[in-house]
Image (cartoon, rainbow, N blue to C red; front, side):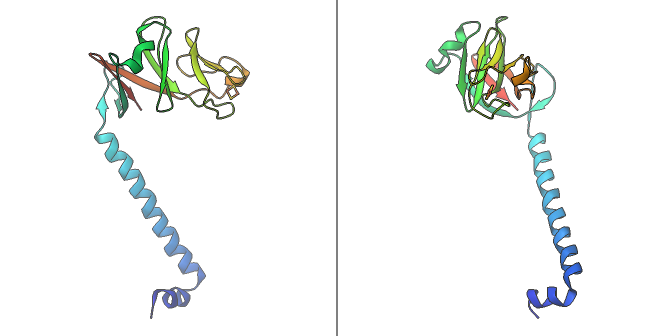
Length: 151
Ligand code: FES
């Protein structure tokens, strides 16, 4: 008896139970993978929370020239990396939550979408109606001249 015949003999209800059982197992594997990734994560000095380094920027490299100035920003890997007016490095997604367009910038010490004008503070909180869905924020960690962007 092959697998198809076996499932037919069990009937539709039993086949559904087998399918659900397999799906549950697959989901558990996915959760386990995430847990393993967290185990390998790096600790940040700022929060003490575990995070994974998404990418790094060498502040001495030409790509980071705009980060030498307070209020300057660069966009790398779909992340807006900015140096705020206090000289701290902050980061957020470039994808605006209003219409999912990659037009978020850093302006006047807050995140600003040039498409319709959504505004977000540095914690990702929306500051106007177009920004009411908030903005995904990333952690940063500075080690010498290397700025890490963390999940
Ligand atoms: S897409 Fe950003 S404000 Fe509309």
